[in-house]
Image 1: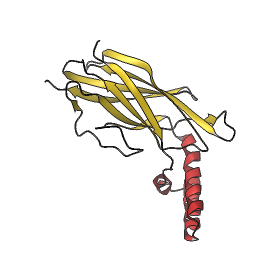
Image 2: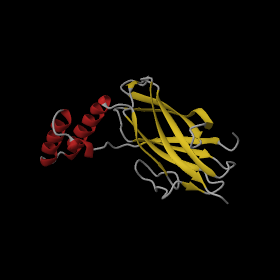
Image 3: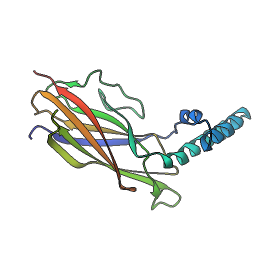
Length: 198
């Protein structure tokens, strides 16, 4: 169906770790790391506490299933991880592009060609469907992202923009398929939306 085209897709890897998750653990490695970090912080070693929590969450992420934690339509490109302005309603004017902010969780990592570093690699496909579930348009490998670093960073998000400027008014479903290249796993998420009448 004419009217749907893939635009440039981008993803950004943030530099800091997610510390709040460590406090949610009641037992096990995360709880132990949190206790150790508290001790380091109490002794004045803020950097040591930071590094312990960051490494613990990095290690724990290996056990998480590959999934998508958040997918929201946003008003413009995010400034960073969790730094976005959500669109109040998934209703778009004729000619307005769809901009989605998506957070993958549980990405797999492998040794990088760069000594001492590891990397994650994922691709993104999309389909646009009507309410009956018929696929109207789509694109494979719409986004292709590789991130390299010293630990399994969890603050990864994708900004994905779809051009629907020629699509008729009506109700649709935007479906993203994220493909973890290292593990071969795949996960999907739907974002219903509407193109308003002129």
